[in-house]
Image (cartoon, rainbow, N blue to C red; front, top):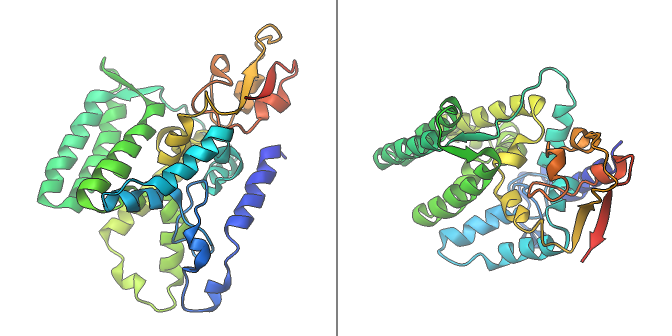
Amino acid sequence: MRRHRFGQIISLILLNLYIWGFFQKNLIYTGIFKGFLQPILHCWSTPTTLFSCPLGAFQHFITLHLLPLYPLGLIILVAAFIGRMPCGWVCPFGLLQDILYKIRLFRWRLPTSVNLFGLILGIIAGYFAGRYKFDLGIFVGLPLAVFLGFILGKLPIKFPTNYLKYLFLLVFAILLAYYTTEPWFCKICPAGTLEAGIPLVLWDPENYLKAMVGSFFYFKVFILGFLLINFLALKRPFCRAMCPVGAIYSLSNRVSLFHLEKKEIDCRGCSLCEKVCPMAIPVKKIPKDLDCIRCLECYYRCPRKSIVIKWG
């Protein structure tokens, strides 16, 4: 078993120690520990979690038109020391993606870029639909932007696919949250749907959540299902293209105290590091890429030991 997998499994257990809710009517823990943030994306409403999601807290402050000093400060503090390492060693949703990719049913590659014109057209369509009815804007804009962004990929105006997560951070976690006072990334978050939305609706001891289920819930389930299919074929597509927390962490990758370096003189270009990388980072960009999650697989598996760990 890969070394970081032990970290993922231990973190999964530690982050989900609250099981008392299944023996009482109050499914979601709201005690003192909910005031503390986890360093990764893990829904506040997950029935088994004791802690809060940093992105949820981030959007909460944004909706109140306040600076999100607490969640942003935590992420920056962690990132300053270890960069994007929590994504590789702690995140439960990252673990799910890693496990599903092990199922060898089919494979395809994540396009390196999408069409910027298609993305803008989808967002504009969503905006005008949203002026009529805001929920409709999400139904129209998000799928259309993704569809047109990839279908129109042959047009010359390109947008790097791994930069889409910054777009999700800016549009859904900041701008929409600020102007609508609603945490819109939380509303469509596939991790939240899987960890909280579906379990709460299925359990529902009071039998009132099922009555609230509507078309938007099924739209969220559709997003989750679409991603789960892609998890089988792609290495961590959510982490690479959608996660706002990963987007913030990635900005520190090249300046964090803990980092990796490659001794080019020792590298023989075997590409084993690229093959074992869960983020599918090209060998020429290892280990300085912004998407590197510091899982250390390239460090442990390099036959020439050309990848080294550095502090400072």
